[in-house]
Image (tube, rainbow over all chains, first blue to last red; front, top):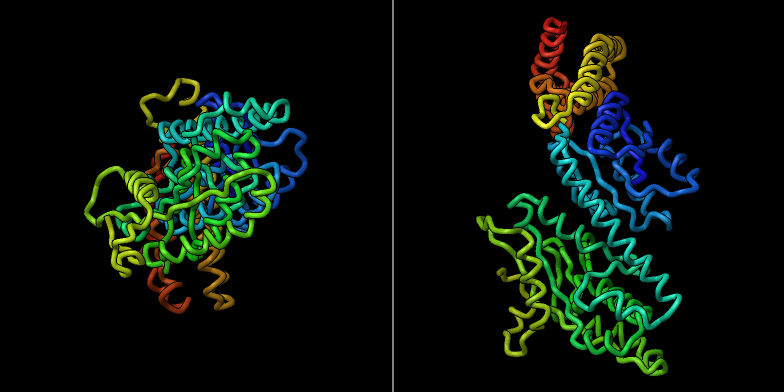
Length: 321
Length: 119
């Protein structure tokens, strides 16, 4: 795995390099600033597989650098792990929104670094799976159904608003209880996702999911949110609990957004995705269970959609789990 | 990685010991840098520049010290960094400088303690 580590403290970089070597990661380059990192990245023939970025650096900081790296087409899906001090947790949200996949805290501990690098490997494996799939599709559209099952999370290369599902889970696992309390998860379920999958080639299915992701993203009015495809026709968004999200309004906007594609879908003999929006799922302040349960709750609610019998305030509401 | 990690391999421990020595060797320069910043402050009255400089130095020490096993030093560096960041969010630079002197002295004491016990 080819890794670039970026930190403006040379001694810390030495320590990090030593640590990476001790964990059997030997192909590690280093940069002492964000600017130097960009120069190194742009000069590579073989792109990096992973970035380790210090959050707080003089000049361009790690979050800005993360955003710059994500803007490069070849690194839209490359795992980025932020290195931060505990006191910089306020930056964590910003880092995830800038496209980071995970973070590790200083002082570094080898065990935690090993765990984080395992996550990196799983993202790389997911990304490689998508690349392999694309190659297979190029050879034969029919190969998709054998290559990937309907219930697997997908990385949709063309859906810019989408983040890998593992990153969404990481994000929730990293939030403290108070911060988890201030977030909510919303599930979006494609009712006819199974039918679309059965009747489409791999490429067509990914295109339709990308259209669905785009319509969902447009319906989320929060400024800061994360959206992922969880597989089985389920999308999940994490957004601030106090945002003005309304499941009913979102449902209407998604339908209106997809309606614009109707003629194209009909021409291609494809069914438009029918998307249900669930009521937001939240967690209690004193709930100490698995934070990712909120995702499962959101998926369940997305599959149920908005019950017609609910009072309008409940349909709009953020009433909690 | 804390140097004292139980799973550290012998060659890793040796390499980390070398990095610890280099860190200790760097401490005098780090202390002098902070003293330069405060001298410059006395000369120019530019509290903001001095505070950002001291905060950046503290941040760098904090990042390395804890990882190399100098927990108290790392903790004091982090407290100073926080005092400056929080102070600047609430007070004028001069007031922030006056309020963070306790943390600055604690950090300098920790730096001296590490130097005194260094082999």
